[in-house]
Amino acid sequence: MALLAADFEIIDANDAFLQATGLRPEDVVGHNAFEVVPKMPEDPGGKPKWTALEAALTTGRREVCQLQRYDIEDKAHPGVFEERYWSSVVAPIHGLGAEVEVLELSAREVTPIIDQFRKLQGEAG
Image (tube, rainbow, N blue to C red; front, side, top):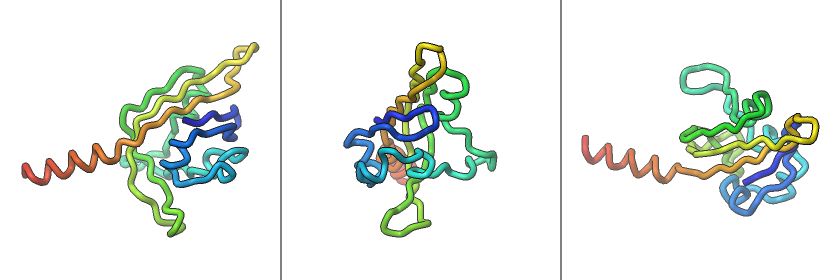
């Protein structure tokens, strides 16, 4: 889980978020989310990626992504990305003026489930 300001600056992140991304608190807190975990340039269909964070901020509504590919850069090999899959929810938190002031990102990595499914598909084929 991570909390972000409306400008996508990360306010805080829990240990599970840090472990999943391979980052330290000082690499995350106070930094823009898209600098910490860059947006993938395109979805599999070749369209620009509109993230759940951007959608929740723009619409002011909760965004649920049951399955989304969002690769993470391998910190040991800059420029090399590891294929990852996530299930996430972004909840906008509105201030007194009804504007979105904070975004709560709750993401669960489901890559091991996808890998297991692919393995089973390979065995069945």
